[in-house]
Length: 309
Image 1 (cartoon, helix red, strand yellow):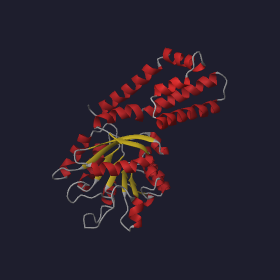
Image 2 (cartoon, rainbow, N blue to C red):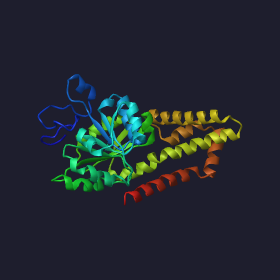
Image 3 (cartoon, helix red, strand yellow):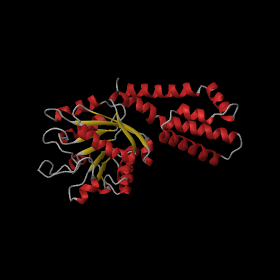
Image 4 (cartoon, rainbow, N blue to C red):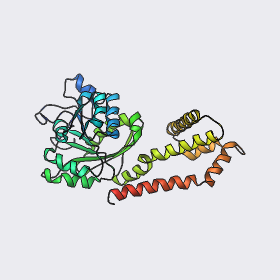
C-alpha cells in the first residue's frame, strides 16, 4: 500500500501488523514458495457472480480454493463454493475476521443491512470490494464511516458481467477515496483471472452496467434472432444456434486481435451487390442500430436510478 506502515494485505486477519513481511499484489505462488502466509479472499454473498469470480481465481492459480471463505444465509448457493473446495459459513462477520480482502456480492437492497452487520469487525487493514449494482462508493464509505476513526475504509467498486464464469468477463473497477494504487493493482491483477478488467472513473460504472452487464442479454437476443432467421430458412435449430454463437465468438476475437473499428470489419465483409449488404439494409430498415443504442441508454438510466443519481 502507499503510505507509511501500509502493506498489501494478503493473509488472514489474524496476526496482521506484527512485523511479518507480506507479498504484494496477489502473488500467491511466490508467497507459497517463500513460506509466507497465502492470500485469503472472502465473499459475503454466494450467488453466480461471486462463484464466477472465485472460480476464476482458483483456475488461474491466483488463490487456492482452501483459502477462499464464502458466506450466505442458506446452503443453496454455498454448495457451489463447497464443490470448488472453498470453505463456507453462515456468519458474515466470520468472513471479515478471517480475510482482509472481501467481496460483497449481495443483492443491492440487502447490502446496507449486511454492511451494518459486519461494520463492527471492519478495520483499516481491510480491502472491501462491492459487486452490488447501483450502490455508490460514497454510500459504501458512509455506511462504514462510523466504525473507523478516522473513517478510512478502503473501498472499491467492481462491475462484472456473467462471462466471468468462463473467464471471459468484461469488468471495470473504481476506487474510493481511501483506496490507493496498490489496492487497485492488487484487485485488477486478481480480476484479470476472470477476463478483462480496467480501472475507470465511477461515473463510467453505471454505463458499463448498461453496455456490458445488461449487454450480455442484448447479445443473446441478437444471437437468438440470427439463429431463428436460419431456422426460418430451413436449417435445424441446434445447428443454427451453434453457428450463430460461433459467429459472435469469432467476430469478437477478430475485433479484439486486430484492434479494428467494427465499421471497418463490417465493410470488409460487404461486396457490392452481395448478400451482406442486402442483409444490412434489412437490419437498418428494422432499426437495429437505434434499438441497440436505446437499449444501452435505458439500462444505464435504470442503473443510475438505482444508485440515486
